[in-house]
Each structure stands twice: as C-alpha cells, then as structure tokens.
Image (cartoon, rainbow, N blue to C red; front, side, top):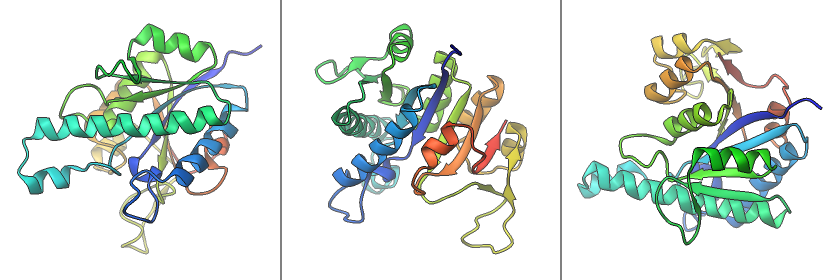
Length: 238
C-alpha cells in the first residue's frame, strides 16, 4: 500500500462565518465545511492537518482602532483561532471523523499542547489534526503558521482555500477586467511580484522548504476533495 500524502489545509476564519454579522461562527457553515473536509478524508489517501484563521472573531483593524498594543492584539487573534479550531473539531467528530486540536498556547483544559512528534503520531493514526493558536508568538500570521507546521510535520503541499477567490492573479480581478490568471507560478515570482497570496514570511518559508501551495476557491462545492485528489484547480505555486 502506498504511503498517505500529508497535507495542510489552510482555511480563513471568515469561511466559518455566515451572512449574519451576529454569527461570527455559523453552525451551518461550519458543518458544511466539515462535510467537505470529510469527503477529502474519505479518499483514504491523505493525512490532513488544518490551520484556521481567526478573522471572523478578531481583526487587527479593530485593535488599531482601539489603540491596542500589537502583541496583545495578536494574542487575542491566536485565541480566536482556537475557538474556530474547536468549532471545526466538533463538527468533524459529529460526522464520525476522529480529530485532535493542538494549540501553541497552553489551554490544556480544551486542547492538546502542540508537540511535533505527537502531531505526527496523531496523523499516522488516521486523525485529522487542527493546529490552533498560530505559532504561539505575536507578529506572525496564520499563513506563516501553515508554512511552519507544514515544514515541521513533513507536509509537502499547502491547500490554501480562499473565500471566493479561485486562483492567483497578477492584479485584483474584481477591479481589473484584464487581470491575468496564473495556472502555475514559482515561489520566487510570488515574492518578486509582491502577489498577495500569503505574507512574505510564509512565502519565503515555503520557498526554502520546497513546499508547494495550491490556491483555490473553497466556496465551490467539492473543491476541497478535488484539489486534494490531484485535480488541477486554481493556481499551483512551486
């Protein structure tokens, strides 16, 4: 039997929210995403790690308007990612998928601490692992967390699920009709052209560790399974 492919799925926090601003975590939306992830998991060929952002609950813009110090604001963002991770874990386990949330912040009452060897062991046992709490340090995004965890656990691809964006373009396709869509592009070009796929720290980490990134639209039903199974969707960054 061929070894399973280890991947990181990066979800934005906004993906978990609904149209109602009073529901930063929309149960129906979370359940729908969990079903999409389970469809990919049921392929039986993957070991899946997940990073989820916290922008649906807490954003830097709010912090700056409050005049908050950056480190405190970032720690609040990390806590938001843990809340999202627990919501997603609950939805996956309701579908019968064994899941572990591991966090870089110490909240042992609700989640396991992130330990690299333990994370790999969970993946090898067929569990989905959700990494909450970012890197555990301020000034780093969940994009950087995705690149760092991928490098640590030996995942060679990050599936970057975008909320309404289907690929990488040379400029904003919503503002420019002549925007050029990239089928493939190198990490070097992403950095050189300042394409806003992920922050520069994350892009450089992926480049240095030969981690591919696939950018795709998660709002199309079945896309997570399609891209996980190798179907050519969106943009491949290599």
